Length: 183
Image 1 (cartoon, helix red, strand yellow):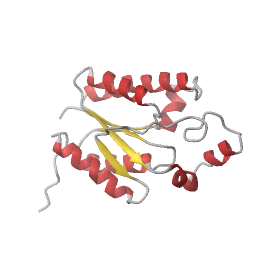
Image 2 (image 1 turned 90 degrees about the vertical axis):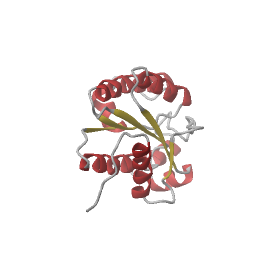
Image 3 (image 1 turned 120 degrees about the vertical axis):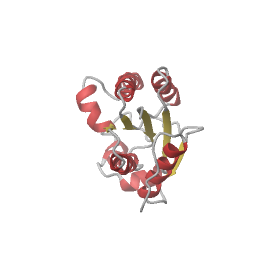
Image 4 (image 1 turned 45 degrees about the vertical axis):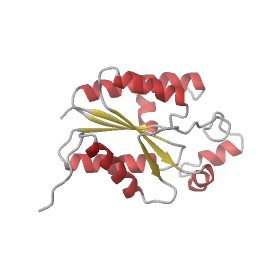
């Protein structure tokens, strides 16, 4: 089976990585080769030279897009979990990946800023609200929600398993994954 890219975008603390991990587990259970690229982890080894300005975020995500394309063209199912706050940048990522005919599925992990601030597992929102962090998405830097995502996952009021299932069903509908047959 050929590779593809599932790009999960949403505010920090929206549940992107949790949905991504559940989806990766499900796909690996089908025998697919899966690579999960998480924003915090990838930034450390791919773009540690960059900050969080708009320009730096765009450079970082362009690098990630090329990495996704390389992995996917080698038959790997790539699940990329990145805030990726700007529509224009996400469109560029899509063009890079689809430029080689690789399927790209944009998933929006929809969660209100209020709920993300309440969750705040890393304490980033608290620090940003105190002025200790600049360019924090949702606080002093915008998040532009996708206007027409391929899959919209309500990560605020639905369990992450439901979100992963919605994405999985989309992959099945596109012929990128096989439904599990029980029996």
